[in-house]
Amino acid sequence: TNNGPSVEIAVPKSSNLIVRMPFGDLNIEGVSGDKDVEMHAGDLNIEVGNPADYAHVDASVGAGDINAGPFGENKDGLFRSFEKPGPGRYRLHAHIGAGDLNLK
Image (cartoon, rainbow, N blue to C red; front, top):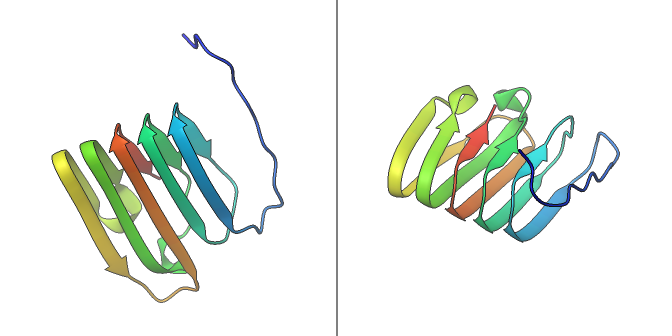
């Protein structure tokens, strides 16, 4: 059940995103380009597409889970992170203070 407001922002499919959000749940889908996302609390779901499209990926949570199947990473607990280089051209940076980070 969603108890708060919901906002949908449409951007061109090929976009570089920078998002800073204090709290809430965020879903990013259908966007190819750099993604730089930081949140204090909430769940973050990012559709990454082909993992080979990324030159650099770093993801971290202060408390929560990282589920990043396309990059072969799944971690839970406190202060979890991973960093991977790749052959692509895009950069992905994602951080949550408390919550779950899902890269799918």
